[in-house]
Image (cartoon, rainbow, N blue to C red; front, side, top):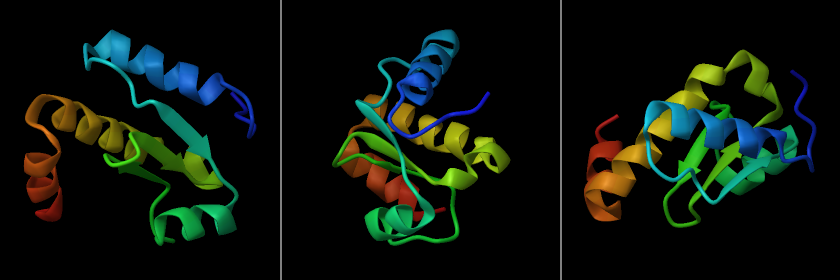
Length: 96
């Protein structure tokens, strides 16, 4: 599957994953960035996806095809935030 910026395919894929896994509501947004935009948005050049509880979004770099496990990891964080609340999530997230 080729995911292009500006399409809803990635958002639909994430929503379908959340539904199938019983994870509750998906993040409000999944944004696919160019590498430069991703680093500017997240301040991170070492990951392919980052979940932001404050923005309720997953930011995704163009390296996503090679790093799909990171997206699933961030979806798990989203699920944990939905259950535990943002403060408890932040404490657990800092342990990683």
